Length: 340
Image 1 (tube, rainbow, N blue to C red):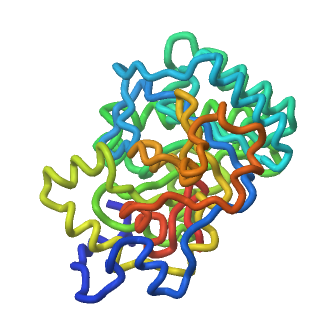
Image 2 (tube, rainbow, N blue to C red):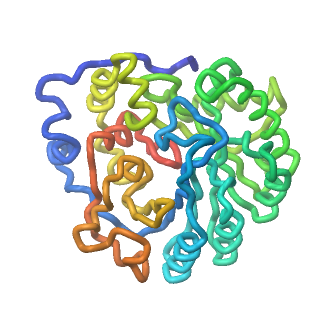
């Protein structure tokens, strides 16, 4: 376990933030229900196919999953981008997004439109058959790589992501460094993602980033730009692990009792739209995995074919549920790391 990680599993205090649920916690803090602002980030989940099957994965991705975005859906997503100049970021995720046949198409078209493109990379995909040119392609298109690395120690990474994953991750990071990723003065951004190995909140992001940089440089000569700390969401595969360990209630209590109203203005669901592999729309990737329809569904907006441009979503309600406490616990959590 990383030094500084809280392992305390605290019970919900009587009359505490749990109340009638997440919307009740907002009301108790004097905050309005969540609503959307301008969509500045379009997160596209291209499917659940992955070369790994990690214990914490909220997507339940793996090598045997068959849910894969078609070219027709990818083309419609690009068309929406053309009509939505307010979108600044295209965030490609999965599964392993690089395994989707339309990955290159999405990257090239988004870059042609001047968008900042993120690839949520598990690193080991660089060594999959047919991916020999992937690292060079990412560098050529100046794709921002955000890579999962839950620890700088092999035993912790392999325990969460599979045997041998740590060594292959170090090799992949070295390959990206050789292309200029993560190097000072280079336009090629390389960020790493930390999530706790168990039912605890992430430690402070700034301090853990400094430790990662020292350890990865000293042990492997690896450089990167930022470390993003992300709270494990109590959904899908991680929720199953909590249930097996009898820790579900305790973990939810931990999240609820650390509800931080100061994180609410920066929640990603206010400026991000999540697109499923089948074109369904969601307020965030976590809602997508729980199949919670976008808040705008009440107005008949459910898929990418129901919109002409993304500005139509401004002011619409955001659909919430108990897992939203995960994004608002402690320093907060988003796809871009801690909120504050």
